[in-house]
Image (tube, rainbow, N blue to C red; front, side, top):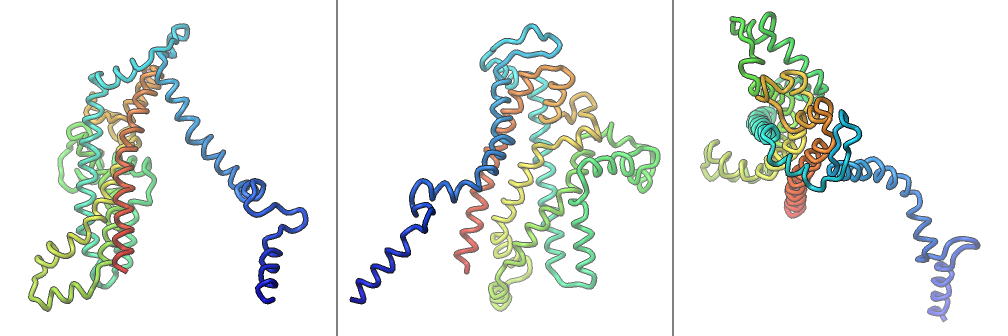
Length: 313
């Protein structure tokens, strides 16, 4: 009797209310998914439609200065992108600029993270000051470096070192990389500091009891523990820095010549100086594909980091 009453109660609980959708029916599924549709449509319109339009433009031979000569050229623009001397130089500059900025940012971030992992008076103030460069807008940071630090007449560098060296003209790539390192070191520092503070104190204490020195503890315990954090910082930094435009545009305008012209700035020149919309779209697609490859590695590293933290609990 009790079983019959229980079955009746379960059937009553599954029975839809008057006018309500039947659980598991198509109407019930759409009633739950419906509120998400505006966000999905907005995401598609904002992200996917422009990319599809860019793909279409990349197959067009379209120069705005010759409006009557627009035609379908297939993959010719991609061939131009991969064989053009200026674009190859921009690709090399992009790799040099990104790799230099990421490597130096990671090394400086590691040193500052080790410093902030120790207790000392005023640590909170020092940490706030070190994070500040990452909060400055990229264009404002580039203007600060160009006028307040690199200016040959009244810049900070010449004020300290003396002389009237034009750092932007004589060392253009170094000038851009220094500005990017100054801004991205706090980002690397925060990621590595999180890794240091997640390290097991029992393991470090056991190493000290076994007679390991500070150098052995760092190289054999701390550094292997920080490896996924270092990889994550390097990959996320690479994804953002490969798109650097503000610093190049503001500090060097891609020059002298093409000394600091990277792919985003070359795409800008192709679009708004040469008006070759088809070639610019093809170069943009190439950059997106390269960024997706780097992002795939970043997501794999991130997944491995989460799995490692879950297994350590």
